[in-house]
View 1 (cartoon, rainbow, N blue to C red):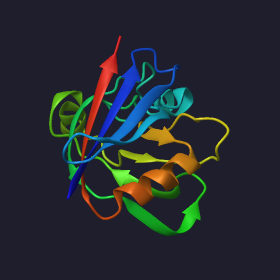
View 2: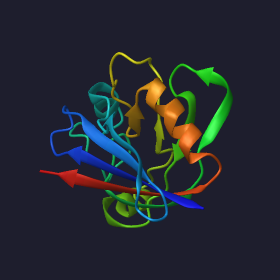
View 3: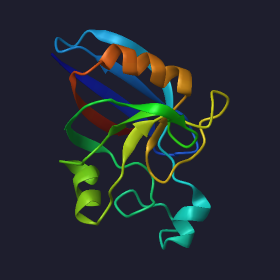
View 4: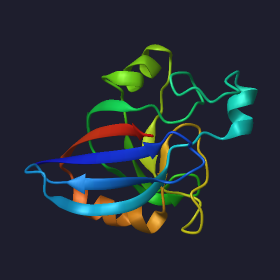
Length: 151
């Protein structure tokens, strides 16, 4: 059975976005999960992307479609990522351009606790507790991911 993650990220990435999980029939399994798709300012500048352009390494999370993937749960929690991650490989939109420009390692993950959604190096961050719920609902199913910018 396939599932779908739909993420809406604001143009101003200082603001919070939302994530929802749908089943293969489009029924919502999880909704209104807060997420952040903002890159860390200092790391982006240090790596040559001071404006955090999403199509270049260390920029904000790029919008577009991502190849079907699986949820990976780690044996032990990792502070930076939490209990697992959902890898993302761009296949359309800015996500594909970013891939062509050398962006790798993009994912949806938790990490850094439940208090704040700390910027990443371009991934989508959710709270640890929300990732646990997502991992349970997603199981071992294939997952399609779509990220859209909202204005």
